[in-house]
Amino acid sequence: MKQCPACRAELPDDASSCVRCGGWWLPDGSFHTSWEEEMARATAARTRKLERAERLGRLGRPLPLWFLDGRPGCGTLAVMAAASVAVAAVAVLA
Image 1: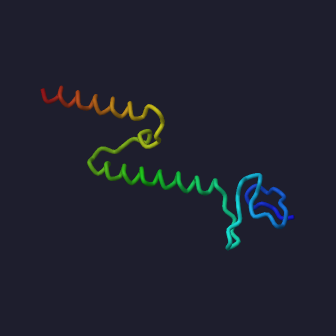
Image 2 (image 1 turned 90 degrees about the horizontal axis):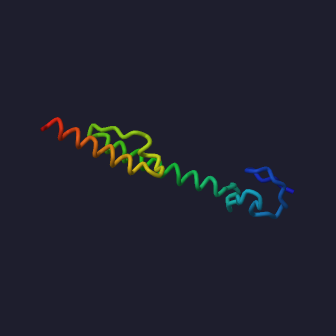
Image 3 (image 1 turned 90 degrees about the vertical axis):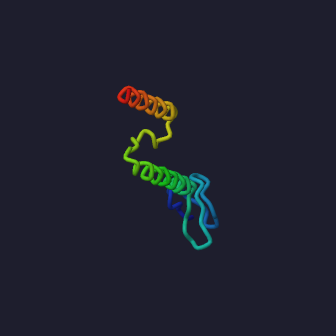
């Protein structure tokens, strides 16, 4: 019997994957889990958002973190904030 490196479940010696956590052994002998893939995708997406925010921040307007989180309603809040800035700018110029 061998042990899963991720969840420590007992597995048969000839097992190529874990039935408990879904991880699997690659041909080179390393162990891989779908959780690692999901975390890699999430990290890459967050990095792309931060890079985009840095590009937009060069215009002199740093973006708040809630804008990057992608929570429902953030787009509405961003539009409302932009509209209020536009109204304030018109009021100052008038």
